[in-house]
Image (tube, rainbow, N blue to C red; front, side, top):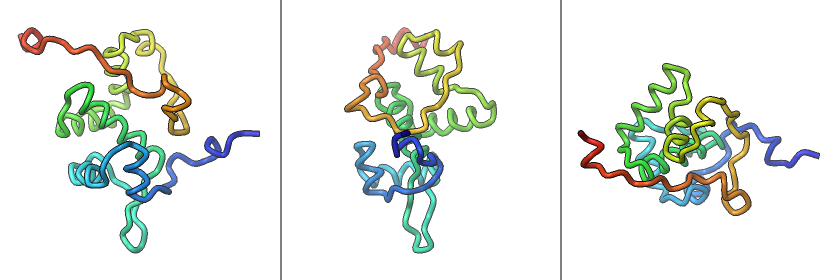
Length: 140
């Protein structure tokens, strides 16, 4: 028997903003800012309540990883997302693999998980911190 979490459609909007914010350990206002910046487009109910899907949650986790671990601002993230959509390439996965030293995952495309990974049960699913480079030499 498959777990109920795997049977869910990752595109189906089911989480209200407070639940989505709790899932990604962010304030609901943060999610509104991401939407204002064009990084997210949650579904809306007829009464205009935001509903987030599992894919939206995964996207929020990427945004938080890029801002916190990679130092990318929201404008840069928007450009990365646009490039990924235009090229149809997995730019973010390559960037993540480069930062973690997992170059083999760049060569072999991986399937996107259908369920949101649970950091409590799968520590490998959470973005690992990357090493900090000396920015003065990186700009040269």
